[in-house]
Image 1 (cartoon, rainbow, N blue to C red):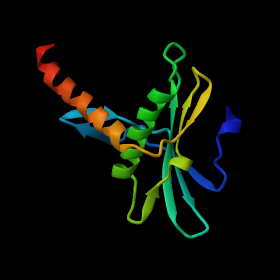
Image 2 (image 1 turned 60 degrees about the vertical axis):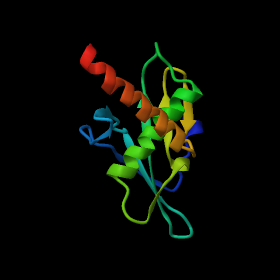
Image 3 (image 1 turned 30 degrees about the horizontal axis):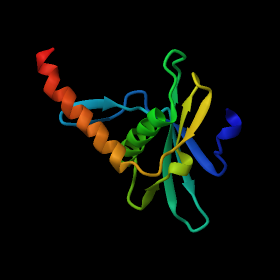
Image 4 (image 1 turned 45 degrees about the vertical axis):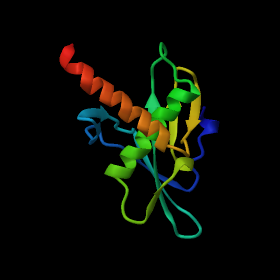
Length: 131
């Protein structure tokens, strides 16, 4: 799996054990990426990304599932760690799933996935009081 991760020219740092959360329709999503990545390209642009690790062997990710995780992690990085002028960088973002033994690259399109996540959070918010 290590051959599928290209961190060349990236500056990795540990993510926080206790971090902020994304909130949709009053439902909190705990994200906590394990590694934050930063990169400065030849044009001087600053990129920021993250690596999320998934350790379940009984519920491995497929490409679609990893895409949703990637979108949520990128949104979290955007809201919690991105400074003015930094670009969220899918090329330096990954979802690593040890169960499926795959490295999924960061997705480029997140808008539809985040709308789906928000819709599911709305469903949770509506159903929660009845449970």
